[in-house]
Amino acid sequence: MKGLFFLLIAAAFFVSCTKDPVSNTPNKQVTVQFTSDTISTYYFRTGVDSLIADDSVTAMNFQKDYLITNVNNLVGDTLKFTVFPPNDWVGTDRKAHISMNLLVDGVLKAATVDSLFGVDRPTGVTIYTIF
Image 1: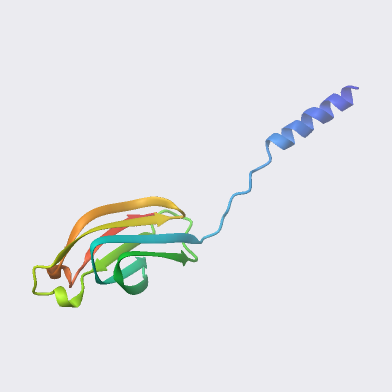
Image 2 (image 1 turned 135 degrees about the vertical axis):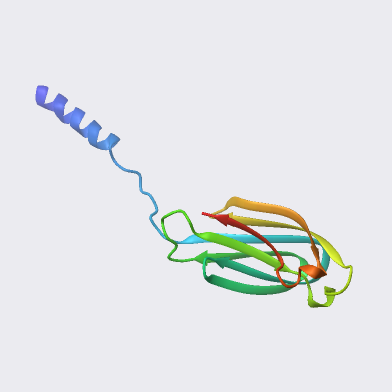
């Protein structure tokens, strides 16, 4: 009987110490979101450290998911999302009110509401986060 008691205690100990499975994958799901009050052709650049993807769309909304592979498990990777105004806005007074969001693995990491002007063409409007 005493042996059964110790066996039950040992089993309970091992069950309580069982580690939950933790995803150790170095991949991150990145989502960029853009909304404007003006329909036009916008240009986008999304980057994680040196990895860069360029997109363009003629619309008022843009959302895209990226799977970033082989991301370090350490904190310090920089995610940037930049929007550029249309080329035909340069030298004009055209502008748009915009909002931009960055999500990593479904969690909002950065957001901004701003204005985009033709003079923003060389550098764009950028938001970033470190994850």
